Image (cartoon, rainbow, N blue to C red):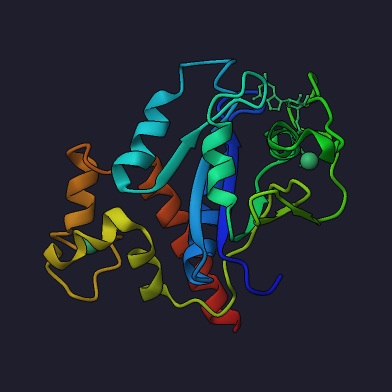
Length: 220
Ligand SMILES: Nc1nc2c(ncn2[C@@H]2O[C@H](COP(=O)(O)OP(=O)(O)OP(=O)(O)O)[C@@H](O)[C@H]2O)c(=O)[nH]1
Ligand SMILES: [Mg+2]
Ligand SMILES: [Zn+2]
């Protein structure tokens, strides 16, 4: 889709469980494509157990909104972000993308579907991306949920670290300017992970993505 301004990355706090690998991939995708990322943690009516995750992304500096399509919490906030912009909602199936849009504009009557109790996943209710006109002049695309997403094939290893904002502000303290925060000694990123300043899962995802990027480099 051309001329998209912002990517609203929707995750449920539970049912389905948050997929933080997918979230971190989408954050990178937004950054690489110069889209403003906004993280929405939906279904706050179901649990308050996962607030540490929310805090972590806020601490990094991301724009985070907590919402419930059911109680209406955070819905006005999301609505206000649509004004005058082209937005895309993305995230796993069943997290509530279509439900959030219905909460903002009930006339949309978008089809929603229950999360499978057995598989603990959404049922891929939205089948095609759909561009919707909001009353405040925004255009929003509802998209089908997905769980697999690859990093851009032309990315090179040095590009990855700076796309993690909490790495970007620390990497000048690594001993080597070319540090990939992997096996190198005196790495400021690894130190920050050990000291609990950077979330372990963010660092683990970084290493996983680094592997992927290095494999892509070989086949490119
Ligand atoms: N309790 C609760 N349920 C919600 C909330 N948002 C959505 N749901 C429910 O979660 C299920 C999935 O919602 P959808 O809106 O279809 O999810 P989706 O992200 O559009 O899913 P796909 O179209 O498959 O990608 C439905 O049963 C909704 O009623 C919420 O904030 N709280
Ligand atoms: Mg949907
Ligand atoms: Zn380093």
